[in-house]
Image (cartoon, rainbow, N blue to C red; front, side, top):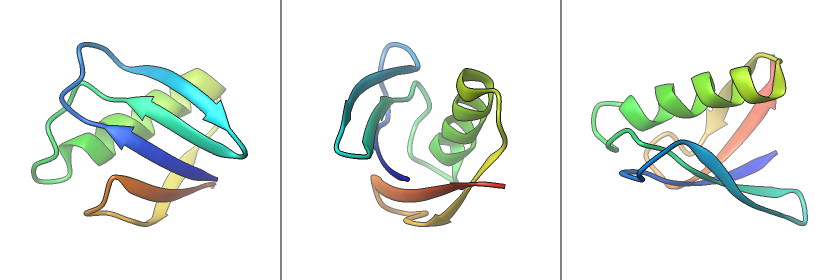
Length: 67
């Protein structure tokens, strides 16, 4: 699934779902992988599944798959 993140947000939340693309606001800063870690924790908790990032580690657009 393709995910677009917005780091430095006020809270972690799903902003919109559009054509198999999730836009998610993340509180963490985009430094040293902190936003990626926060994204995976949020998705794991929200969907009650395990996810991992397979591409886009340094981009706001990421490809995330279920483990």
